[in-house]
Length: 115
Length: 113
Image 1 (cartoon, each protein chain N blue to C red):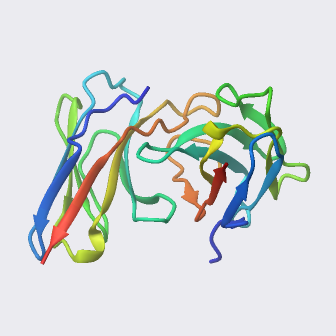
Image 2 (cartoon, rainbow over the protein chains, first blue to last red):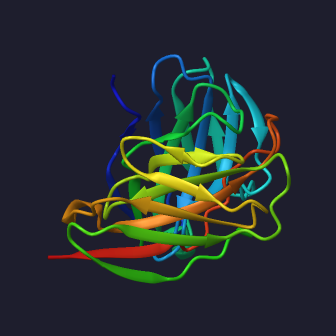
């Protein structure tokens, strides 16, 4: 079974530039999550989708971050404009459904460096 | 904020059992205990989860105390490839809107030869 795919794996940009990350979840997984992981910390949930609808985006900095999952499959996370403190690994995860007993499967992440 | 407390680091000898403790004294009756690990430069990997009873799978065993305020993840025969950060997570009730996983800093387990 193919895992969660993410691209790019690495991205270096200057502050105030824009960047986008792509995620392809495991086939058949209705729930998709984006996490931000700052160096030395655990992942922090940014947004959760159930099919193509947003379930929870309470921790997403909406003034600069946006995410979409138009057809309920792939998803993109965008930062515009980027700040130095956005330097982190952005992880995408998916699960069969968004219930507490459904494990989440994580992709390898995209490492963003903002200069 | 994470609902769990874990030691920041632990060492274990290769071939021996690794016992990783987790305190979750404020856990609610319908919250699950999850364990994930993160090997360097990879995404977190699911290990095991439980509600009340002890659980075992091919990777590990999860022992939850009777009062559910703490748990222990046991890797029965640790190998060098088990070196990773291990996260203990308390996860919300079975609803779509309140089950996000709040990761803490985890325990960095180093398995030594």
